[in-house]
Image (tube, rainbow, N blue to C red):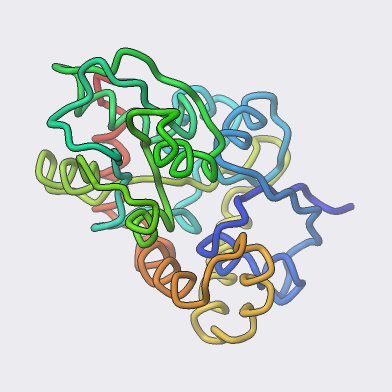
Length: 259
């Protein structure tokens, strides 16, 4: 019987999971795959919807009773944090309406902490792909974005008010934990799951062209050069193994007063 697996259609996730999804990891089971935005997977994981699932690190306090955190496969690193974008020049978010990708995302948690002294007047949860167009059209004063938006926001005439990854690194000296891979307790052996995921990561690095068509098919009309930048930034040594520094970063995030 196939296990259920959920992750985003973003290039880093499809690159990492290509081998596992396509039966290229020896000894791994078959998977039924769901592609969904992280705000969707955060909520679904609270209901125990998947055997393996990609979620926000900021959602862990609500999930670890039912899931094991895997030491690989996720998104954690430096220079890859969320951005606060605006169309018009401003110094902070005082009085602003800001669009965010989810209330239990790492991005939103960091934004709340960064803007604690001058918070926005209103927060609206908006699908990720609608945030930049919404700010550009004037529906929102600001937008909180992640992933490939780092490479494309200037096309919408937007400017970066804050780089929350840069802010986090300055505050903690640690890489920023964005997305985690979880294995459901009682459903999947976490050690076995970690080996499957790690083997999929290593296959992706060893055979980067093997996943090319799969990644581009799910890249939401992203240009190939942006796809390459996305993968290079978000798939790194912490994707293979969190290590001591990665776990320290996760612990620091979970101690945040914004949680």
